[in-house]
Amino acid sequence: MSDRQGEVWWGPAPHKADPAYRPWLIVSGDAHPFSAVECLVVGMTTTEHPDGIAVTDGDWIRGGSDVAAYVSPWYATTIKYRDFDDQQGELAPGVVRKTVDALHRYTPRPTEV
Image (cartoon, rainbow, N blue to C red):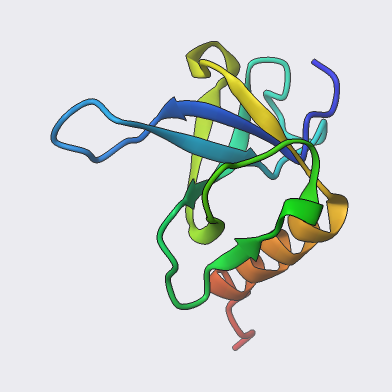
């Protein structure tokens, strides 16, 4: 699988009582140990939350959203490519970089003792 970092795909939303789908931003690249079959993703939403990253029309390299879109960098999971349904588009590298930086703030390295 080629590097798909920055692509936005619709896929299953875990931890929902009823089956639900949402857009997912791929944040992993070819360095992922199973990059041929799965990827690390963060959720996207139409609801503004504190620490959510607003996605503007100019942030889309291709595709886009008819409504306000936000990346939720704290909502991370792994999804197999086969579970994606439709590609919504692709986001600019700057948005992906901002998302990955935010994700790292939620996963700080422990201090050495």
